[in-house]
Length: 164
Image (tube, rainbow, N blue to C red; front, side, top):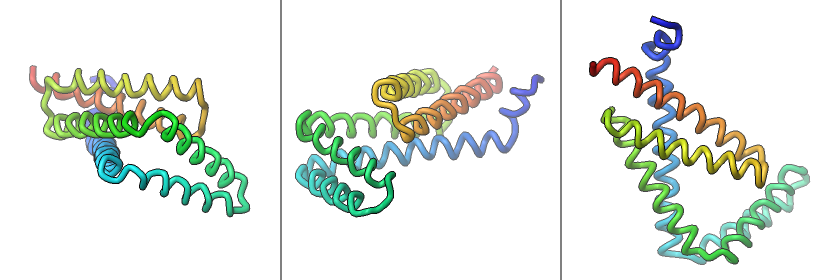
């Protein structure tokens, strides 16, 4: 048994798997709820983003000023680009993530390749955004998703070996 295989068989790896998949599930739930809230009350997003921009600008920290610019940019993009696209993105993204998380937590073996495919597509998109509009937060999210892909792949390999 090689070192990587031993690591995948450890309790530590099982905990890491559960935590990372649960994080994806929480993220998916937040996206789904956000999309549904925007569908029901579309003007609330503009109000929230305007409030956050104002609060961040009142701070004396440079980071908060940059955050205010970022939030204002998001508000402008949403207003210009159409809220329908944002709502569809959030709802579809949320439903896909929650479906994947359900299958992964139930350890449904045939779902792993599909989950990995979707997770890799999300990761590729995040890497694209990192190149086009670099930000520390996007780099951190991409790194986290790369870890999640690695952990899900490892769990899939482990389950496939057990099923043989």
